[in-house]
Image (cartoon, rainbow, N blue to C red):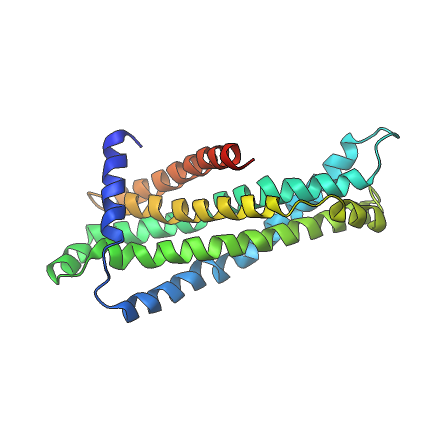
Length: 244
């Protein structure tokens, strides 16, 4: 995204936050998008988080071969890695692929089929009508999905560690409950909020300014996912640097 594109992106966001014509229509659209982003992604996030937690526990156990290091450390490292980094970032990247491509192709198709032009002729603020419900649903539901992912990642770690015999249930539970810092959850939720904003607005921008036909919509959809993933990783670094 060069500076011209970034400027257009900021101007689009300015148009998105203009006062809505009729709040009740927006409210219905917000709930539809919350259902699509949140409920629709629950199963995928559950499977990914559980397996990542299990695999991470096994890898940590494999690396901790010293007799001087207590096995409870496995639970502590799994907990902190899941909360601070893996749950927010991997959830966001998975959602960027699933939701980002859907948003970009939906708005892009509306652009090339001149539905957006029709909305503007009717006097409707098309950026607000099309993007604001997605944005509000994203910044609400992505943090919820991240909390869900944290819990399942730690549970997956418990299952993976205890079933493989790498750590006993008592050692793992002692590890995840010892020296817990609640601030790590705050950092993760700030990341989730930022990622939710990126996942919805970057693909919406790519779709909104599509020119051409079906091929250009597909290219915009691919570009939206790539740009969103890079933006997520860059913001992950910035938020971590600022808050930790």
